[in-house]
Image (cartoon, rainbow over all chains, first blue to last red; front, side):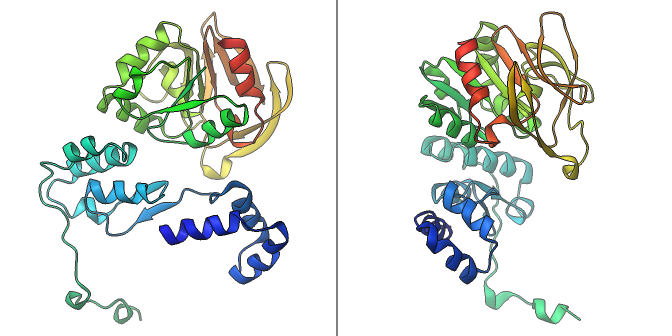
Length: 129
Length: 187
């Protein structure tokens, strides 16, 4: 997220005549780069996704500059999905309120457990035909 | 003067940018505590009305805000915001603030492919850019509600007392005239 926002700031700070070359190097449409240059943001919501398991994870991504957080298995592979989903939504809305984050983080049941790379049995490339 | 923008979900950042261009300070309403400060007007941004309604209630902001609107706090609502203000939703039993005498159909234009951009007349202002993004439609108005804009025979903006609601997004275009109208006519 830091890297993305760093790159967005880099584009925003470019001189107008640098944008053509940057669009070529990044292989993106010039209009898109011009939008980012003018607005200092992407034309779509900058979502954080992947590995978010707790309200604190979601709040951290917002702190780092995400505009939204997308959570899948972090919710569905937890002990109490409905409660955890509600807590993560509130954590994103009020990510700057540490007291509320602490309250939201308690009593959520078991969190999703991450999988270490060496524990993965099913390799994606083997699934492809 | 301070304009409060409901910042639970949706395009609150774009609304803040409009008021920044007008040199009007804004604050974000994210939790009950944020309602304690003094503010002179309220913006209900576009987004998803069910999510906004749920968060308003879960965060105990619903009743205090509804009471402030009933007591005459000037409010400008766009897209999902107009659904929050409507007294009746035509395809949903839910009612949120329900402070405005309008009946609204959610997502009345169809799927995302049917979202469109146009220009139109708003309360005498010509060629105002209007973005309709999975927009709702105002189908009926009670007496006392003044129609400010229409598109293809459909009502797209209304006013009732200190409440202003529109089904499109004026905040996305860079045109600040509707926000300026709100500030000059309703505050």
